[in-house]
Image (tube, rainbow, N blue to C red; front, side, top):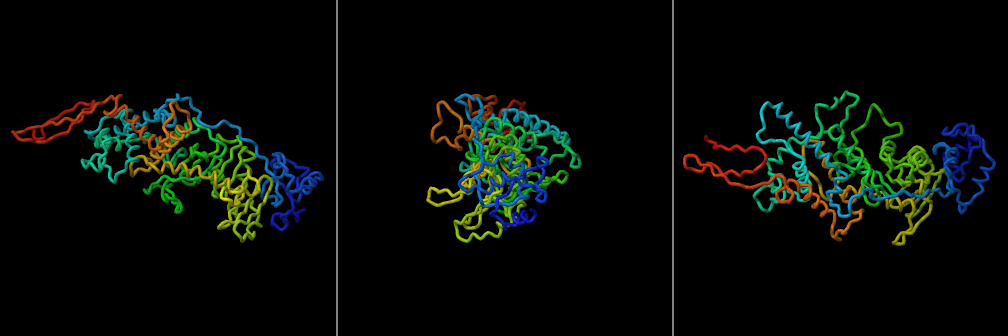
Length: 533
């Protein structure tokens, strides 16, 4: 019996089919080849069937088989049992049919976030001014409608980009943006940008404290946004997990370098997105290795399990690449969390049969299949050998629209793996905000840009009356959103609380013109005097 197990593991008996145990002592215990007793009924069922008579594996049978690296693989295939996905999908909100883009945005980015930013910004300005020992004559407390206008300017700056910040307010008509300069003065924008804050720094734990959080400044905002992403939209069956990057080249201890990505330096983000639309359902900021609690089953295993919380035991099909993939992960997803998976896989992973490394696929289009219980390994020769590991695909070829034949696992992986890339593509069209030396600002702009993309996708998937025009695209959605965000502040809109006027004051001293001053009327008290007096 021990020799048979060795031949199965080394690939010398790859055509032998694994057998079931009759007396299994405890559930979940690994199968020991030396103490295995074979059942006559199981031998007849496993060795007597052909490829045409497919056997549907049950969970109880697979629990008796044990883990993949304890048993051999075979080329005699059985059809996997794939349960039907019957979960309701789509928007889950109850907005009216004539809801505006701002209403959809507030579902994901609530107004309470602006109120928090206003409170923390005013507090931080007060602390900075008190620490300096002298008053700031250009600063006065901000309000929610002004902060919303500030973020509206950040959205518009991503749509209309200029090389320098001052160009939005310059007198050069080729560079000047009347929409931005007419909403807020350059000095006021600079002051809000200087004191912008999200959380009180005095409450942040020290680095040697057990509760230390590297992204303490943005943690509350991340939690609010993530909760709303999963609350107002439920995805279709296919999901994808991948990594994204927030561009940043400053000094930061958890900054990552990925030379093969379009953004090579920045902050790494793990994302879970719907494969068809690119709607981001969950994400996590990677802050480096946790030396106190290192993952026992690998970083990729931990990331996938964490992102799929809330979407387990619903027969979803999740797709990811070989960075995350292990046979143990796919088995645990299926039998512990009711989730099917399909991924590329490295051939040096533990649990992959050693014989596949010696497989000779010379001609383009050659294919070989290996199966171990619920796991289906597809080896296909394209420009190079592609290895796909899945628990939901069948070992067969399908015809493409161009007439070419490809394995079903390769077709499904190519079709549904790009959900995160699609979300990143939407974000790359229009950035939010300007560059800064503070790393957490880039995470804030990332969160807002991601909320805008998800709000646009939610708007597109919802019903409207009257329906939007055919040319109402992502750009028009952003323009309308920026216009509605500044509506409570700008003098160009009807519902305004602060009115702006441009008045020229001519101050004379000893019968000659001293200066020409451009004054903006605001709720504060304005005091003017001659510079000589």
